[in-house]
Image 1 (cartoon, helix red, strand yellow):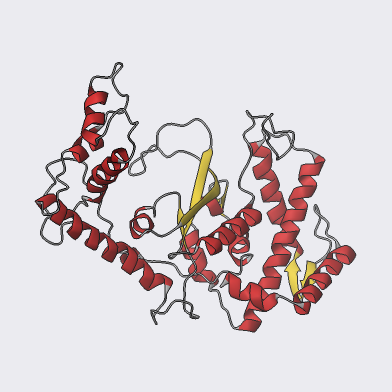
Image 2 (cartoon, helix red, strand yellow):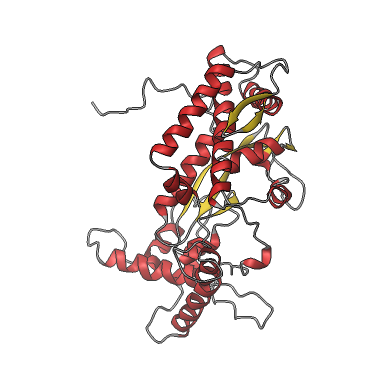
Length: 364
């Protein structure tokens, strides 16, 4: 979607549209404290509400002030003003152009799903203008996934002997992690003559006698060391069955979403990416071998109550969002993630770490 709009906006038309937008703001400007003009700008004949722009500026300003303990410079204020203006102008330009190209975004469908997502909240409350601006600014066509759209992902077996596969509707554990751990590490060590240990079992034995004891133990390594990776063993047959099942519930299920109802990649009904909060959607793409990109998603307060059960943390801590896409979609995901970062500016350098003199780091 984003690439399609980008491609169709290329050329002299895009230059004319952006040039007109620039002139609009040069001539109109905006009063940041009073409600002087009824609109901040006109983009292709569509008015951008001055009140909405001003309100968004005040909210973003308050958020930055909180993160900086109330200290904010005039340069930072001007940067926020410019960012807010750019967000609304880009939003309206993309919306009007997308409408002309036949793309549609349902506000209600979008808002219903996003109202509970912390990265689109201000002071713990859903901010409609901000959420719509963030998503529309990227030219996104949004579909809200239901839980049933993606089958439950089996967890990894972490003990040995391997637990039996339960009858439906029970969810099995997958032996792929344990089996691959032993098989691949042993293969690597076999090709590394200088290694002090040559099998996973030897590493487990070494760790068992190490002083002081390992802080987090080695339960998974110890379980993996017992797996029989012989070509006709029961564990190998279980691994092959688990791997096939993993691909059905991850790769095949995700491709059905990415490639749309027609099942053909590269057609108009494709989905570019799935956006998820934190790493809540990590298992499916990882098992399928599909790429994901994680970027800053704002700051949230810890929730120590069930079922979240966060650890007690004093003050706000960083949250992330993850873009996942089909095989070989890394360029598209990087573009989407970059666009999201530029639209939200959620990353805040830690106050405890002084900035570098420049973005370049060299070795003397």
